[in-house]
Length: 295
Ligand code: NAD
Image (cartoon, rainbow, N blue to C red; front, side, top):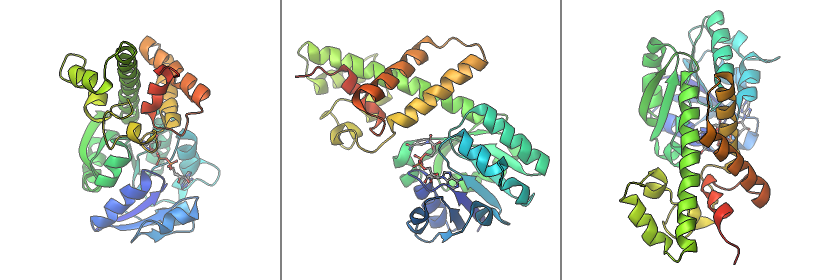
């Protein structure tokens, strides 16, 4: 049994912590929202992040964005300075690679190992323990982390040095946004020309346009059951979070002077969608609405 501290019990963090408990670990949790701590059965709620981090073998954070991660570890009341040097820190949030590298460097200077380990697989993957972890940092630290990550996920990839996990995750989500917008566009074109979206989906799925959205996350309402499009785009991966990730992709492209014309277009499409349909809290497949004709 490993003693684990866990900060951030939101849509992803709560089921991830629950899977650690189910695997037999001793899990001490902290969230700024008190109620979230009592929702995770078998977890030990703490009064502060510092208390959750005190003397644990592994400390995991699952927070919204880079500023939260920076503030938690190295802000004014940052917990890093009080952490044991033997604690392995794993940040699973999706954040900018620069912040990930800065916090990991501070952890190293303090004497701790730290990994960036953003995830893919959404809330379903978090609940079912089938997340993909995309890890940046020292290979030996990753070997230490494997049993703990394995309790929450099905795939673990080592992307490279510190920050590389975040870069790989950002590349993946930029591609996901492009692919989802493209799929919605093709479906809308077919429907505008008299095709049944379910028939068109089946044709494209088995043809050269086949992709992940068509296979498991069809954006057109009524085509696939159990996906956000079949429940008014409630739940799933929010437009606001996709906009955050596309913003990270744009920053990363700027920093490396990379050309990302399709990513940039997807960034603008999702922002336009958020503004025109007030869609921030809808699933990202709701980009389909941008293409649907008003009756
Ligand atoms: P969320 O907003 O539901 O949860 C974040 C939680 O962090 C909140 O409960 C908040 O109160 C808590 N928090 C913030 N600052 C804190 C602090 N200092 N100490 C303790 N708790 C603090 O977000 P989420 O959907 O769980 O996503 C978390 C991260 O995972 C994000 O970076 C997101 O981009 C990434 N992610 C989300 C999904 C998804 O489908 N939701 C998929 C992959 C990756």
